[in-house]
Length: 369
Ligand SMILES: Cc1ncc(COP(=O)(O)O)c(C=O)c1O
Image 1 (cartoon, rainbow, N blue to C red):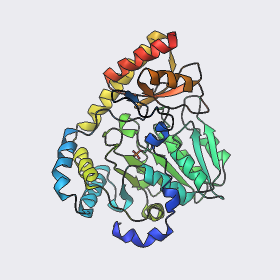
Image 2: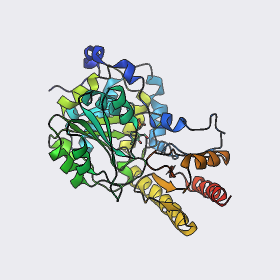
Image 3: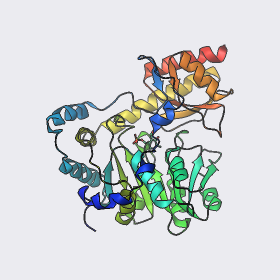
Image 4: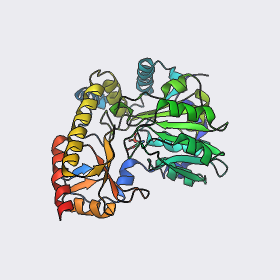
């Protein structure tokens, strides 16, 4: 199959479900649905799993340098970025498509593989974008609670929906920051119904040591992997990501999105970030260190939380979580949302050391009030 060209998808755009695509729900939209607006300029923003470090220096320099070329579509830069990523991961470039963040391919994958006859199966709690998209596709949404160790319960997911079109695995999971073993993902892939896909969302994979599911894509399985530059690379506002799958699956996903071009600033920043060898291990260390210190403080102070491997974790307030969010907002600290299955828990993003100190004093004040 020939290498994907952005222009070659023009003819497929008529099939795109544009109305549905416009209703994609991204993390900041989900976070903002309960955010106090407008928030103060100096508010502590630990509600959207953003990276407070932003793009690395090489990425900032690359963005500045590309600005004069902003009048061009520059497909070639996107192709080079795809080749770089393909080389790094030992993938065939035909298996990779570059997108503005991973929200679009997540939404489009769900539109492509769910329908009123093909259910969407997700863990509960988990990231909601796919679930919202499945509802738009008219699919049944099947929510399966996480296991006692907060992994995806793959056997229960299989049993819950013999007619599944998509099994969504978020690894590490948002909001819990917990892992599902590679063996469990493989089990799901090997036992899923024919025609279904396993959609593995690796938005946070760089923040932990867990293995990726890319090997399952390489071995030709019905697996779609999503990657984003929004998290460890600190590029949420620049928008770059990849969807990685067998070309026949990839074509079905992309067909629903119509034609578009990548912002050259995002592509330049992403390429510079991939070429910065220390970036991922260094940021993983920084995030883990601040997360660990926060957990130690919570332990000392007697608060309950779910240990996490990512840049967010669930904190049990033992009260209605939304009340705590509102009270924290009054202290100028915006914390993450509440999932209906865990009504006393709030999601906390790991920010900078200074932000987490603000969080600690505001949280202590509210809980002691
Ligand atoms: C699990 C997960 N997947 C995908 C996304 C989408 O991110 P983006 O569109 O910025 O790549 C997010 C954002 O927070 C997320 O948490």
